[in-house]
Length: 194
Image (cartoon, rainbow, N blue to C red; front, side, top):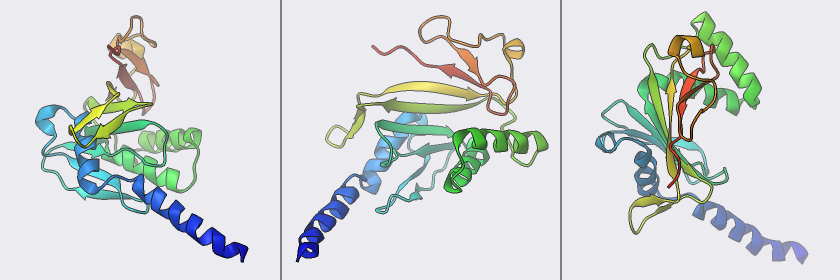
């Protein structure tokens, strides 16, 4: 008799999990807000299906690729990046799907980028991230709330010496270079919150 009592709980759990994943339109509307306004309408958007699997939600017409908020992670984070970063991002997805840890992903991509197997951007390439621990998309206003933007400009193998940037922010929101000298070298710009 006890197992019968568990069936409604199980069904409720499944419904609750599905309710955490916004509909396609909501995911697209939230994700593109990380992109510059003039790029939002034409951006390609990846999000999540009812099973939490990453899927293409909309094929775009410009160079921006946006990612919806991952329902399996705490907080809120959407991002948009230039299409030249797609091989780097896709390879990271593949390695995470294989169960690789972040340090192993870094090492594998570093080796593959140095060998030429992993194509990295030739020019500086920007990732825009709109995130916040309490951030959320408000379907009534069509806006993301309680989230702020930061910018990550990838310049593979750049160094503090080649860019003139410090290796840590010197002032709030100041630009600095992270992972210098590696395939993942990038300029971090995190404007202070109001």
